[in-house]
Length: 421
Image (cartoon, rainbow, N blue to C red; front, side):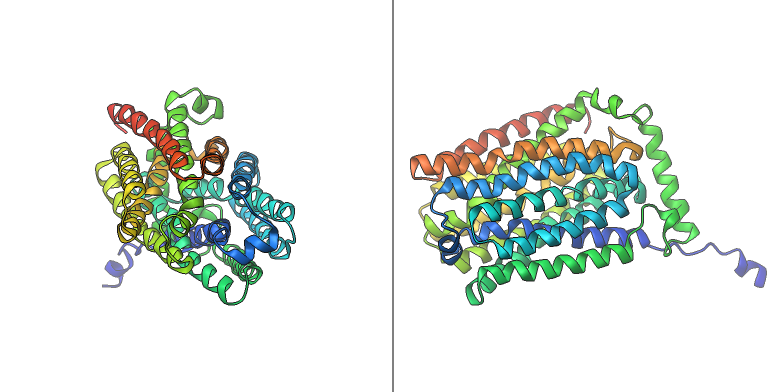
């Protein structure tokens, strides 16, 4: 009996989900609250009056400056992550985004706020390189869409928690206090990351032998599929990489263009009260969590990521058109919730397809290049909506311009489907 008991296989731990998936989810949640707080504050009159913000162009620049520096940050951090590892890179990046939130709370002018947004963009640029690198090293290929859907859900969970909370804190205590509260939460994220995350399963205190072997087997299987992609040059020569980058860039243009101005649009055009508009946005992001998790499980099952990305692109166009041209305030709110629910899903699955063209050894650099180009393009979104709305006195023209980029992503996805993605 003793011999038989001794030969029983060791039960596999689930450290990859608890110590990597969960911290990444929290990090993306907090980072999304930090970056999107400006979206709800742009509909807050005391904030606008204190900083002398009077036109749409300035509003757009506050979002776009973040995206430009975010793009620069991702490019630089990609090389840093491959050099010093995801763990050290994460600690440095999170520290500086804590500093950026404190600086935002102290801002006395638009220029000071622009500095805060710029530092936040550079420092938060570490997120995608470390997340993609950790996902490649900690999860086998048959779990990567679920893993990325998990942490990418932070981009939905953040606004669900953050938008109404920021609105209520700003309304009750002041917009500066909302910045300081976010700085404290970001500091907690730094401590959590330091305590829980490590670069690889082999270096983690909570991973047993069974889980380590399971992960290594899944990663080694993926390496065979990725033969010849161990160098950055080889990946950059692959046309699929550039198609995925363009798809992600177009989706990002639409997401940031819409999310930056949707609270203001609902308040100014549809007559929805300030705090209520925040709850409408939060409801949309809440529904997005279910959409992303469902698409992650289904795409892992059928391994047809491009089908889901293309379908979401079509839904974005449909819901945005319907929300603009409805005369009902209630219907505008419902359509806005549906619109937000599909805005983020294409991005997570597009990044999952990136694992088919790049190996874990170069994922930090490739993820940085991928994100840098995509978010540089994303800066177009808020600028287009802000400039066009300022010139025409209406959001309609800017939103219609965004649709052309979403249409490009839909067309490119049709090509990816033919290639079996």
